Length: 111
Length: 115
Image (cartoon, rainbow over all chains, first blue to last red):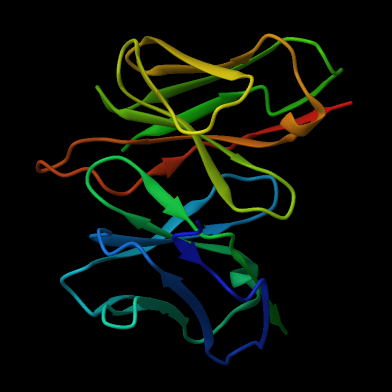
């Protein structure tokens, strides 16, 4: 049972435009969500998180939106830059320990 | 802030050989520690986590095991590797901060190829 789903394995966006990465979840017990960015052969880097009591969190070019009723969250990157090209993982957390990750979306930003 | 070290960075091993991957953490005490695997075309799969010395929880039954001999050391082992053990192994940690542990931070990873 896949509790966190990233249904788009890849996404291509023109430099300067908005990138929107989507994530759906099924576990109502998740009380926070995180986005990670991963380059090949490196560990994931934490990007941004959101608590389940909020519907938006912003950090520079990155904004995460949470729609609890739809069990959906999205990461917006504006403006997109070539250095943003990476695999993005969405994760849900419940309690102190375990994160459940999606399979990732590969973002390609075209100059 | 914490720093996570993993070694080796890459490893090529024959089927049936043993495995030992090491993870150490600097900059924090009593962290929660995690082992993940990223296999080709798949997401991050949690293998083990540990909330303290000698305390290991296994998420996926397989021929791998984990140990935590010291507070900031986490070891992933196998007695006999399988082809399906190939993948990118990641160590991660989080810790209690203001009574809440959430964000996990990852090490650089070990690329394991089993031939």
